[in-house]
Image (cartoon, rainbow over all chains, first blue to last red; front, side, top):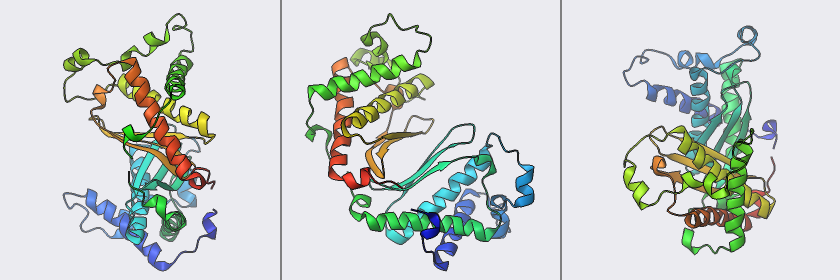
Length: 156
Length: 156
């Protein structure tokens, strides 16, 4: 299934961003970010052309970027969960050189299976593109669940 | 599905042990273990009552035991793969305190989903029990594939 074949709606875009912001705020146990706007919280996800040029082509991902990837897919998982009622579990397996795999599954169904490469360069040119990317993954997951509902709701 | 409801056969028991031994021998790039018998290679999987008493109830798993758990499930994956023709990918996610999750999936089907606990105590009382455990997981995986073949062979 190609990402751009999946239809999206504004609700999914804003739903995803809300979940991502929630992920961030949930980490902020001391309230240090209470005064920060959502855009500020998510600013490290924004890697524009200029910023991308400054990142080496090959590099080891630091813990911060791994954490951003993790929160990104957690937010995808929660977006899918809220719209389908299927509990979604994310699992990430990263090689230290910046490639790896993330899967999201619900019941016995793998709803997202994504090979990651160049994780140290993870990011999107604008907040809109970030929202689109998250919403596209969520759409793909929701689509898989509607295709194989019995597997997504399988218990055991 | 309960583990003991799954039927096994001798072929699966020996098939699993063969895969596990192969996993070990494949790591031995310098041939240091060429003279070792299979039972010797697998001896650290054998945790009998006496040995179990000596392991603290709570403990952090060391890299060796994590590696043994990984090879164990790799061997389960290969046993399933050889009997179904479905490529099986294992993913393990471990918390440092010794609990975590291992899943094996093929196509978009999670064929094994296992919560791990007390990983620092991972082992079986005898070689036969080790073989039975591996073969039981393999049976469960094969059973899942025969239940949802379309999902196990889904590409995309």
